[in-house]
Image (cartoon, rainbow, N blue to C red; front, side, top):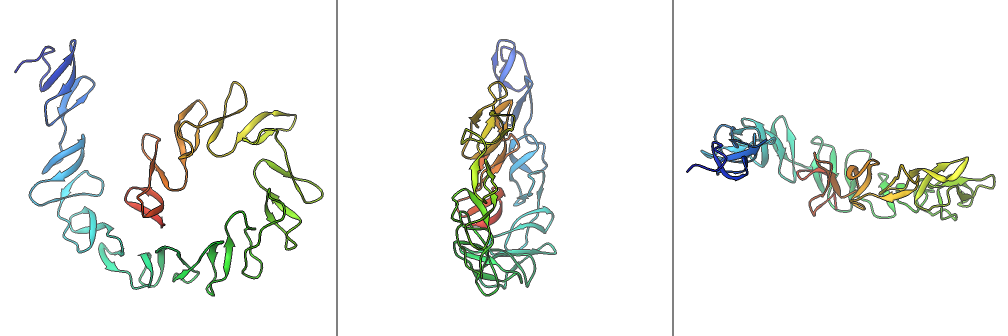
Length: 285
């Protein structure tokens, strides 16, 4: 059936320009192009990215191919019958997915070393999973704290996490009174105490000659180039660093989110506390 703009495979037009294509074609610069050039692909989400294959074939990890992926416990392949990503609880070894023998391990780096542990378990120095609970950030082989979570002093004392007396101190000495390093936005004075360097709590660094001029903001904020003050990023708190000239463009996402190719932050899967994509989990909840 002819259409008003006489474009091949066009379903709807806006004046003389095509605005919608028939099924199986994709609109690009006013033209309808074949949306699924991938061989044996039955459906593409975007040109060249397959989402479903014919003939019992499997979509490759990148979405660029339809191939055979008959590897046990494999989530996706990039080459025929060579696994690229394994199912949860299995680790990739020479293109195969093998069960991780280490107790409480989610993903193994090798048969003797765990890279990601389940739940409150964390890898120790020997690559085994051991229970490591707050306020420990990481633990020693004897389950004592190796490093501590904020607001506790990062370095534990005899394996125990203690907090500095100064609430704005990030690292203190063993007496817990004398500060060695202050939090962002505070400076260490001669008495070992932290004092605010900038008048705005949103500003983490300001011009020493004029403290009203902010040069760096806390996470989730950016320096407005006109007022030299801190404004919130459009996607905060998911976005913790954005482009000064366009605060809707995110440069760095908060923990629990990953950044996409169009510079937006997307939440990690519910079981994952840190990830680089929807399929690449770095740390479990």
